[in-house]
Image (cartoon, rainbow, N blue to C red):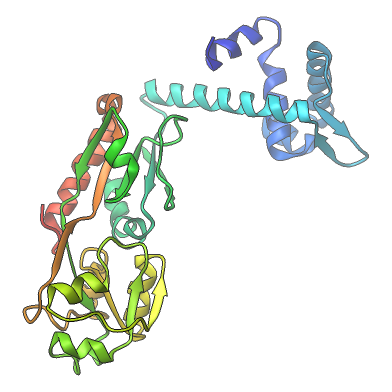
Length: 310
């Protein structure tokens, strides 16, 4: 019996109003706050939860003078009730033509910060009934818990490579080249000049300074400079004049367009190219119109981006 079936089986003996009162009190940590949310009195919330406790034969809250504390049994029930209410909410949103449609995205942090976020308003303007929720981290969505609809992953993501039953769409080739503030660019006229410069490293990138120096026939200088674990930090530091970053021109698009970063060796050195980001989602989600709409918009934005090769 799955969670939703179990939830409705419980409703045969336990009124939904009791579970609503319990969920609201557990989520807010207060009978008074739950009462305000449900348009009830605090005593009505307390009474509903007391009856629920009697029906289940367990204490769900420890009551003190002005506070409540959830018991272990209460925490266990809360996890399942909250998930069931969320499942019902998402189900009703999926079939309702009036409810806002929620698109839940997991996105690689630098792609989210540098490329997606500045464009997202255009997607929302074209889809006013859509609500977008974004989580950005170096973890990858597994989709088994239903928390996300799609993931924009960095190339090394195991989700993109080994999980069966996944749709994987390349977001096109990216160019990786040295980038720095205009004031620094004036003294960089050849690849060899970078040996004397402060180099900004992105430790989690697939293509790094040793790859670039090797492609340009040079030995990698001894480690020195600044190190970051996110490209958006490296790009920001380079734009502030702290050194030279080896970064994707797509991720640095705004800084390049605004004149805060330049590529001093474009046309005078060998750039690196690779497929860096992918849109990933489970195959059944192909039937989800929100996924189709977002994927089409993403491809259109990439096609018009000055630093993309689709």
